[in-house]
Length: 134
Ligand code: FES
Image 1 (spheres, rainbow, N blue to C red):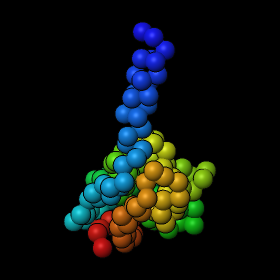
Image 2: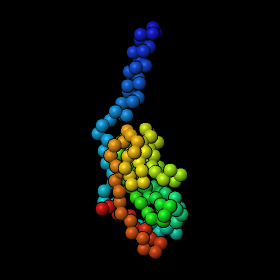
Image 3: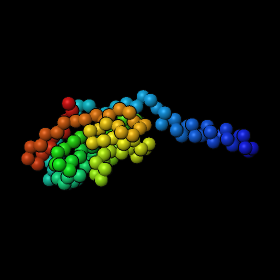
Image 4: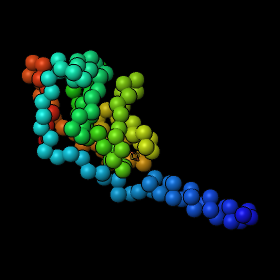
C-alpha cells in the first residue's frame, strides 16, 4: 500500500467513524405513556432514599437530587439513543457513546446531542414514588 492509498483509506475510515457525530436528526424517541410506582423500601429502589442516588427503570432515569427532590428523564440520549448516566459529582448527565452532556434540567450543554431529554413527573406518597408522563 502506498502513501496515497493509505491516506485515502484512513480518511474514509475517519469519516465513517465520525458519521454519527454529524447526525443532525438528533431526536431519539423517548418512552411515552410512562406510569409506574416504586416502593422505595424495596430492592434496588432503596438507592433513591439517598440524595445523589439514581436508578434506571422502564426507559427512564430517576434521580434523587441533593436537595431531596426527584427528577426523571428518558434514559435515551437524544443523539442516538445510548443510555445516559447521572454523575452526582457534576450534578449532570453524560452519554458514554459520544460524550454529550445534559444539565440537571435535561438541557444539552455539550453535543453532539442538541435536543433536551424528555422529562417525566413524580409524586411521592409515603415510601411510594409514582413516575408518570406529562
Ligand atoms: S448517542 Fe451520541 S452522544 Fe449519546
